[in-house]
Image (cartoon, rainbow, N blue to C red):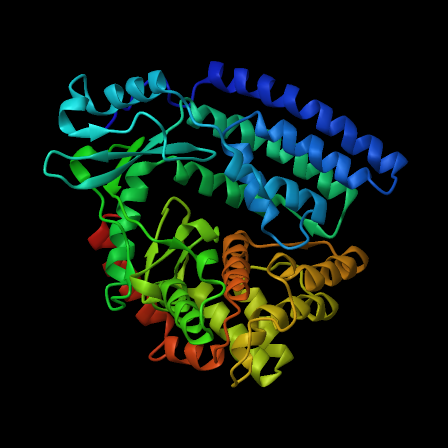
Length: 451
């Protein structure tokens, strides 16, 4: 483990520098946003989106990660914003070799290079919070070394403050959704993503939960070469999902079915979700017969009764039972509900649960393009909430909803045709909140995540 007194830990001076940097970068975007609100024009949203994306692209770190998250929530941002911000992950520049050597020395000691047969100087992948290097251990095993960028703890605390300001502006301008719970949820998940020790344990958790499904592979961590800012794991290879878009229908259906179990089995049996729906976190291997699941920084562990609410709402929607749906939303944590607000929320619920409610083979959303998945329904909900709202979204709902939408977009990308109802019913066999609680406790304890 890295020294807990490390000066890179959350420091006031680093937070201050970060606030000044981010604030300066965002000032131009903020001016553009305000001007476009007043003066409008056909290209106003597009201009503001470009300015915001340009500002965030210079900030490397948590706020850029937040932008990526918000861009995946249907209609939370205008389409122009979502498109621009969605590109940030692919554009993240890597840190150079001097940084890599300093970080590796700090985490593994001055003789760190002796612990590898080879170590790639160039990053194999760079993202908002860290970068990955390919290496080989003395025994010939190929590994991925995930290195965190410097001062990320301080950056998170600074960027959370900036995020609160940005979403406060959104709240005043929009008025359909109270984003306060969203901010707190995103902030907590960001703090967890910086803890690579937690991510290492989450990998063991997923290896345990998905053990019955031998078609999905979770990379094995290398404990001796991991710290809270360095995560070393087995290097895995596979094809991106997009490489299989033109495969035979039966093959694409098989991949989609494996995606279903990879995501839903941990939810319905353990109340745990993989909260990052990025398509790059799934790899197809073995000629379409297997999957690799990657990136375990954003793992959300729910109270079992929250997943009970997910199941209760599914059953209420299937039975067209309004009162049961009302009770399910309350169980989830929606506050200050009334009949009109529940009717509005049901628009979204019918969309999300739609494929699960119909006992037939179908696509996840007939006639909808992957980039438009959920946007029409979200627009309708937002419009109605502006009249009747606002509604406060419970924090547990944020990543559940985001991940479900991301999974649906993957199904659309594959053009999959499945009986989602039968698959979901199979996932609920023997379901009870008490059983989920027991399984969750045991699995978390085994992975070391129950402290």
